[in-house]
Length: 127
Image (tube, rainbow, N blue to C red; front, side, top):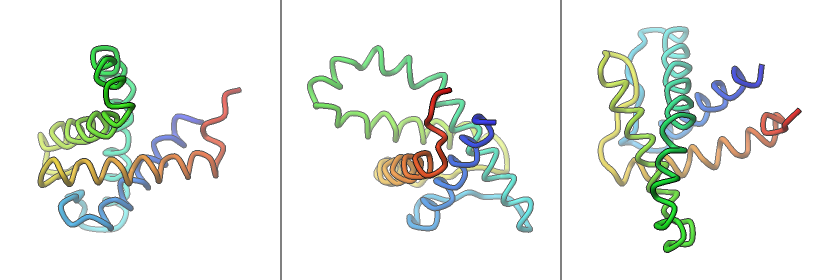
């Protein structure tokens, strides 16, 4: 159940980021139900990218994390968001990002919203 909750949290965070930033959008979906499904799929892809690719990047970028006192996390999160956008660009539906600056701001918004929603729903608790 926590996996489904994480996907929903990612989808809500991405939806909020698309409402705030003009260069970040999710395309596809003629009606509300289809749009919700597209956001859930983008949330799933974003979660999979963060679960599979991000740990590998963290291992190789560890010295940069130390040098920047952790600020490089914003760059890595933006790159994970851009990778999600690139993967979803292979279809007519998905996430579209204008540039790297938008990706950094989007990743920051998504991280904050995901954290707040995880704490509010208890999704970050380990059983």
